[in-house]
Image (cartoon, rainbow, N blue to C red):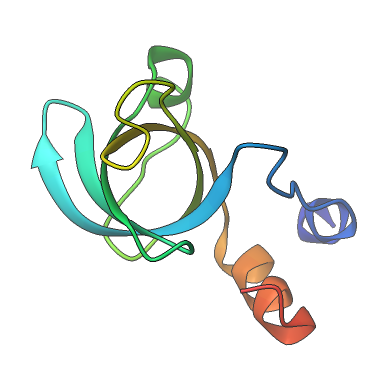
Length: 94
């Protein structure tokens, strides 16, 4: 039942946010993320997200690039579950 509710309303990237896939864990709440705009960024997990969810290699995430060093760094703002990723792939979004 919970999965159906999550699938109905998927969080999509807002203006200034992009999809990404976690490539490597770097430690200290940082990871290397390959973004849909063909850039690899070092992203951090902000505290409010770090306390609620676990992020691992291969996860599909939404990142918000920083204002400074936008091509190199960013913050992770959302992580998709496996059923959500499957739905995004079936719809051709990622």
